Amino acid sequence: MGMRSGYDPAEVDALIGRIESTLGRGARDLEPVTADDVRRATFRAKRGGYHETAVDFALEAFVVALETKATAPMRLAMAEPTGDMLREEWFETQAARVERVAFRPGRMGTGYNEDEVDAFLDRIVATLRGTTDYPVTAKEVREARFSTVLLRSGYLIADVDAFLAGIADVLDQRG
Image (cartoon, rainbow, N blue to C red; front, side, top):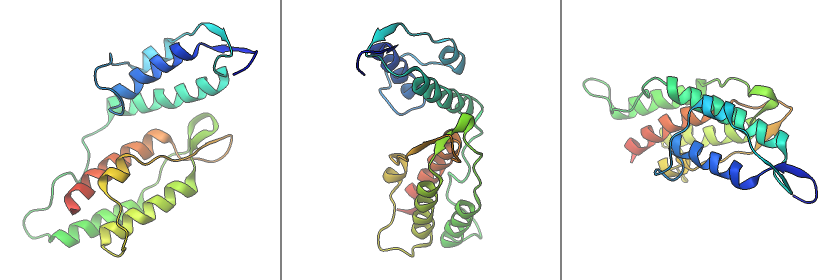
C-alpha cells in the first residue's frame, strides 16, 4: 500500500474469492473459475494497490492448483479395508504412504516451506500409528496453513494440498 500504483485490491480479492470457491475452500456460492480464466485475468491499476509481482506469483500457484483439481484422480484410500486386512494394518500402510510421499518443487521459485510441511507430516504419521498423545484431527489437516517461500526450495502447493485432502479423509476414519 502507499503512494505507488498496483493491482486494484477489490478486483484481485474478487478473483481470489472465486478461485477459493472453485477449490472448495471459500464461499460455495461464487461463480467457478478455470485456470484459463485466471491466466486471462487483468486488473486496473490503483494507487496503493497490491504489488503486481506478488499477485502474479500467487495467481500462478492458483493456476497449478486449478489444473491439478481438474485432472486429479480419485483420492486413494478413502474407504476402510475389508476382508483380511486388519484396521491397524491399513492405518500402518497409510502412515508408510505419508513417510514415502515426495512432492514436486514449487514453480517459479515459490512453494510451501519444506520444514513446516515435513514436521506436520511427522505428526500425521504419529497419529496414524497411534504413537502420540496429541493426535492430529482431520479438521486440523484440512485447515493446515504453511508459510510460502520465494526464490528458494519449497514444495509445490497444489501437490501438498491434494495429498493432505486425501490424508484428511483417512483421519476421518481413524476416529
